[in-house]
Amino acid sequence: MTKRYFILTGILLTLSAGILFGCGAQPTAWTDAEVEILQSLWIGSLPALEPDPSNQYADDELAIALGEKLFADTRFSSNGKVACATCHVAEKDFQDGLPRAQGVGTTNRRAMPIAGTAYSPWFFWDGRKDSQWAQALGPLESAVEHGGTRTQYVKLIGAFYKDEYEAVFGALPDFSDASRFPEPAAPVSDEAAAANWEAMTAEDREAVTRVYVNMGKTIAAYERTIMPGESRFDQYVKSILANDSAAAETILSDDEIAGLKLFIGEANCTRCHNGALFTDNDFHNTGVPAIENLPEDTGRALGAQQVLADEFNCLSVYSDAAPEDCSGLKFMLTEGEALERAYKPPSLRDVAQRAPYMHAGQFTTLEGVLSHYNEAPAAPMGHTELELLHLSEAQLTQIVAFLKTLSSIK
Amino acid sequence: MNSQTKTIVITTVVTVIALVVGFILLMPVFGPRFMHPIMSRYMHGNSNSVVSNDLDTSAERLTNNGTFNVSFKSELDPITIGSMHSWVLHVETADGQPVERATIFVDGGMPEHGHGLPTAPQVTQDLGNGDYLVEGLKFQMGGWWEVKFNITADGTEDNVTFNLIVGG
Image 1 (cartoon, one colour):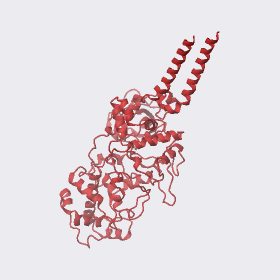
Image 2 (spheres, chains in turn green, orange):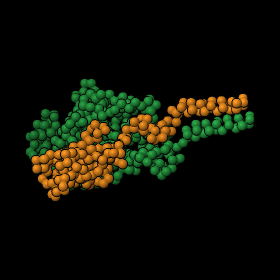
Image 3 (cartoon, rainbow over the protein chains, first blue to last red):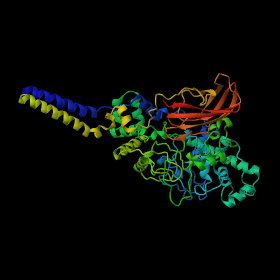
Image 4 (cartoon, rainbow over the protein chains, first blue to last red):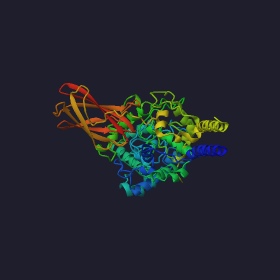
């Protein structure tokens, strides 16, 4: 009898140990639907970049090379100290780590990352531009960013980049006559610059703007080449897709995997952060707090009106696109409460290196962002799309752990 | 019952209880991974909507008041997340006669999330024979979408709603 007792106890202990340890070490089981979502987020699912119909020079090697130089040249500013690269620092994933960008002054928004934006139909947090080249021209004439004017810039092209410019675009007009091409001169808020601009002939303004637009097209050609790299998350998905779950388990930790499961599941993250760049490129109000003392910011509500009126939009004379290539602009949503304080979700690739977060750097850490999403506070204007998540601190930490796996392997 | 049998029974019961309690206590360590996907879905009210199997996702439907029989054909099949595309909408009378020169408005959204369409699609061409080109459709997230058409022809107005499950 004693023997039977020992055997029984032994069996029970073995069973319990088996259940406790066996299940603990069991590889994560993803459902078919989940694997499909994982695959859609995988960098390997990023389609080949299509030509930009609005920029015929977008894939021109010489344009790319010139654009890269212009991107880094601080002469293209009112004080000679600000280049695109000032706020879009290559070593910092093309952003500056500041809550609000610092050019010749301080902007009201955070500098956005560039990697993968060639896939986006809208630019800036509010989508007030609809092409990379039109976007690149915005800061150049912003009073608080580069602070200069197009007339000043096209003269700099003549002085320092004439050959490179002409190799791409043909003859550069002669802008040396200061009476015809005064500085500063541009259709900007600065009164002196605006008055000079108005005094110029329509033909001269057109000649200046053409060259200015071409500058934007070269910068865009360069920016098109900036893409995110493969991350540990991508390696994990690759293993999952190859049905090698044992290898997959060595790439991500249990917490990172649990965070991924929450990300694509109950945390609702993929409602907006979907696709291989983790953004749906649309506009969302997530109840991000307003910054005191800044002017009212209506987000997409204003951005939609601005892009419709933009002198450089897809339907403009400066765009190389045929009207039928401008469906994004033609069928865009122009009004409604959904646009109020709605902003574009940036890609989450490399997000861990890009604090602070949100359109004006409202949150200093990913933990802060996650707790905002968990609590879903009311929006300062319009309606938040967030819903209370009821996730535990441990779960939020797991999501943060997962987000860190999206960093490109250098 | 002799004492040895009693001991075995007690030990068995105690071990089973210890096992169950231990398992429950260690649940957080296993994490949701241990749960069967079906169980976890119901426990957390998973956001990946569990759309009712009764949802009519057919591409041909009668308008609410039975005035028109409407069908659509998408340029994209299947419809992928985030792609701008167009549809051809075919409108006919309930008895199968093509309806021409209709005025059609497009609306829609995600009923579960309370938001509308991300674009403003429009009927841009009357293709004749009851066919209409609808341009500017885009669905930027996976899940259940509704696309609604308000149709007026010969002074009669009626509405139809199509249900789509985008992204699987």
